[in-house]
Length: 149
Image (cartoon, rainbow, N blue to C red):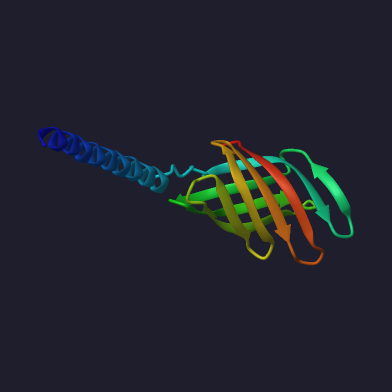
């Protein structure tokens, strides 16, 4: 009888120890998920891109032609503008507003009257962006941006 009580007591102790450990691990997993680092995207970005424009075909452009300027950020929401020079030499500027995913690895933003972009945060100073525009003529692009300031 004494042996049974000792064995039963150890079993209950082990069950409680395992249950406590599982709760401990679950708590830190949940806290880790909810406290993912939000990358700071404020700054000026430029890079090369490949694009397709309906009617013009495929083309590529080197760095220093297209700029992404993120001027403000509040947690996972950011705003700024894009800027490039068209064929006539005129600077074209479009306001943007975007969001960062909860895990801090993806971004999405809209350009005012000019399409939508989604992408990945590759590192603290590098983004890869896919651009989609359904205006006439339709166009798409893949951009690799590096922070310059």
